[in-house]
Image 1 (cartoon, rainbow, N blue to C red):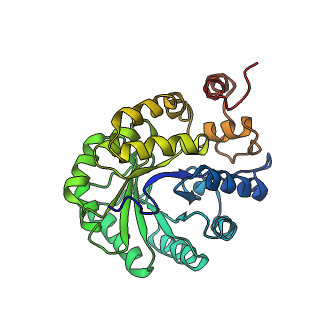
Image 2: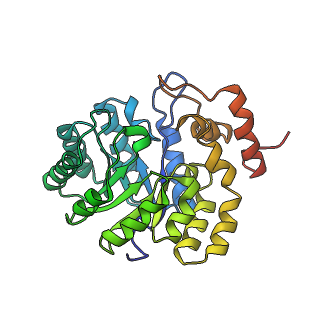
Length: 299
């Protein structure tokens, strides 16, 4: 893998900022894009899990993608979240993202309907054949109730425009197998912040991160240290972020990260049902992490 590839390093799984009534706050979205450009984030993933893809309708999903791509204006690569549990819908979203000018698409394994491994293969194969844009697979069995095997990933890695995978299993034995079974230029990204440095040191190329919403520059430094093989520095930099890695998942993502960014003054606190604002007892825990990092004032 070329270490200068656009998606090597820290890619942010960006929130979709909302007002209290749940409507999208496009001005705050613009400010967040600027925040990540300034911080040196490798790319922005728009309308993925953290961007509340599950609670925006198709038209709104596409509007957010189009806005993000247009506003970024090639100053930072945009990976569009276009996965769905309907193959035809995933193709539609992916085609629209390509039309908008996305740099790549992130496609989660179909959730709820629990396809077989062959079903997963045929799903991703058809999307790749239908839309000529770079595509990144996304395996997150804790949310989807289906776990794509390393063998299925290896088969899919042979398709030219399937360029990588976001592995959010948190199982470090998986990265070892992916390194062994996938082509050298196949992008291996983690989706598990807590194990990200170990993932990279075992041969991964970076991550798609929730923590990067809050501390993008610090996380990028840790990832790049790991990519360069400097384990001591990577672990040292990452240690300061360990509280965030844990407590940004104290309740279901993106509940905590949206609260954190609200406390940092970067967006309103809107979130859509069935998700609710972070509970009061969890706010205390997360706010302590933010204070320790100097991201909000200590009282």
